[in-house]
Length: 347
Image 1: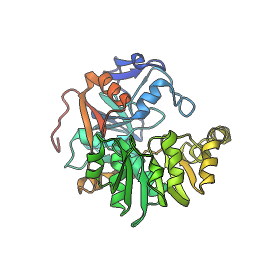
Image 2: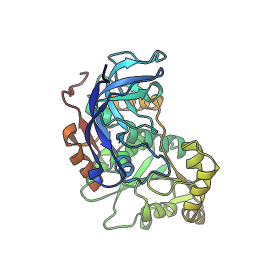
Image 3: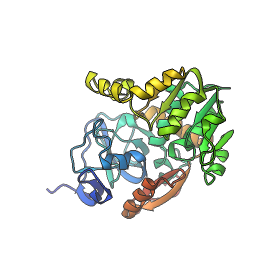
Image 4: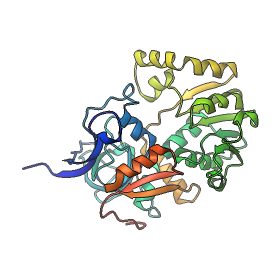
């Protein structure tokens, strides 16, 4: 009997936008600890176009062709025999496994430990905007910066997908937040709770900020280097836009001495600049976690965190959605919804 087919956004070779396209591919089959999820909505993230370009081949090399996409919201269709936490029909959201991807499709396989139930107050499009950006912000602020009440935290690029979560989570932890934004993004970051907003088109952050207890860099480049001068001696600067360092290989990726050495060499100048300011540099690759997603769901469900969605595209126009993402113009998250996807709460 022929295997059931589905539509998916498939990467055929590394390179430009023309190398990813909608195609019919076989529906994946879950293992004993996995679930097959009917995807109702999927979130777009910079990692998607960086993967397409081949920027991350050193960290994760996929066997091509491969279905792109890293986060989703949908309904459980089937459960592996060892799945205990979920049942057929459950509304779930997840950051899918890094070594497989696959959320830009009508169906996707999800590890039980990577998923969480969607609160009844959220529709699929909103839920799909949470996993990757929300987990990145939560794990950086809670686990790496150990943000606590009364601290001052610098978050660059506050109007983007990760930044919009990070500002709100840092405020939830009781911190004062300074961020950078363009004039177009200032109203949004102030709405999210930013105490100080620096117009990066007019001012350098390090010219007006100093003595901060930690920094979360989402921009890289000169903004990251300024973060070292903004924090107090002994403080940590966490980045998702700079150069990976040795702990990234061992702690985040579970890799051995070879990649650790490569990252040690690649990040040497950044770590040296950090030391010159008495700061510590850490590059973070977030990890999928159903437990952390449940915590984010609680924060969103209780209105402690608001999900900022820039725009929603039908799946047939995912190439247009990717182009907007790659342009850097989005404020918040870009989402694609599948045909016949319910959009109302609790659907």
